[in-house]
Amino acid sequence: MKLDQLVAGAPSIEITGITADSRKVKPGFLFAALKGVAGDGRDYIDSAVKAGAVAVLTDDRPGEWSVPAVKTAEPRLTLAATAAAFYTSQPAVVAAVTGTNGKSSTVDFLRQIWTHMGRKAASMGTLGAIGPSGVLDLGHTTPDPVAIHATLDKLAKEGVTHAAMEASSHGLAQYRLHGVKLAAGAFTNLTQDHLDYHLDFNDYRNAKLKLFTDLLPQGAPAVINADSPELDVFEAAARKAGLKSFTVGWRGRDLRIAEALPRGTGQDLVIQWGEGPSAGNERKVHLPLIGEFQALNALCAAGIAMALGDDVNKVLDGVEALTGVHGRLELVGQTALKAHVFVDYAHTPDGLNVLLRAARPHVRGKLIVVFGCGGDRDATKRPIMGDVARRLADEVIITDDNPRSEEPAKIRAAIRNGAPDASEIGDRATAINEGIRRLKAGDALLIAGKGHETGQIVKGVTIPFSDFDVARAALDEVGGSHG
Image (cartoon, rainbow, N blue to C red):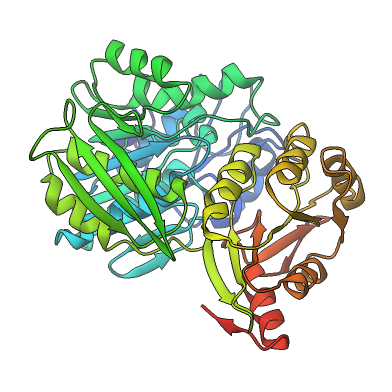
């Protein structure tokens, strides 16, 4: 395809591919040299040209190179539009979900609901792109626009008609979803996270709002968590953008949970829809997953399907068939005394709060939590998470998460400011083993922070590490079994 077909006013040069990663450049590629927080893509233009790049897309700072350069004031936005023009196919229905917590579960649940209804469906996000042909690692919750459009193109050509994708604040702020033809959007919640990247909480909120204000077409449904303190802000933004507000949750106007009763490894829900309870708009549903937050994420997914016109009873049939999302309150196994061990991705104060509260009704004995905080990320949340663990768990073991370039002991010390009586075991494997060793009949261990991840980042090196593998080995040592 010619470059001038992708970018108006650009030279008429044949382009065989697009990338913002100089290591992925091949002959005939357009290289997007973007300025980031930690580096500048312009530093890699020469190596990209040596690898075969025939043109460069960059910002409007001065600079000349041996190949033509397309300069724009918003090169990230131009890259998204270019990627959308290069990869022309997308599933007919694409829904995007934003929020601090719950995105991964909601898009996965929506994929499962659609699949249960007989649709060829896929989901995209932290867990990768999951579709009929398997799982594709995307690297980020919301990858760069080239990866997004290439993946959507691939899914569409495989016959996928319905796709659900996560929309992170980074992705929204950096125009990564521009060019995606969205049919619906959803907002789960907004709590402290990513303040190492965003200027302040308002900036973080405004990034999330872009899904409604900038990306959804007029008349599209905007599914909003009615229980969030941000309801009024997001609903006002939806109305101003000409979207159809559809609220879900305990206080949902359009879809709500009237009752929830924990049942072993699941829960019975009374779900209502429409304006108030009456004959014909209430149904009892058994959700085979524990935790209030899982019920609310499932409700959000159901709300997106309903808001797009799907039959409510077929949608709720899909809810009853849901399976857990990898690394989200996932049962690893149990000890010989029937004490359960779970792994979860909770890595924010609200996420940890929700996780511990969700698990409590299912625990007869002590609730033990093992967790840490990531390095080179928002440091203010560390003592807050310590305090959450102190208040809601019976025993707390502070350990390392992904310390990255920071000194692990300093991160643990910051957490201890909120949980001064907690145990501290820096080595994560040793901490998990200690947590399992402490379990007695009726107890439960929650291993939080890393979820599905299979590596631990220390001083720039990713060391193979899985909470699941370590926990399974520890259960084997105490005569336990795997879930």
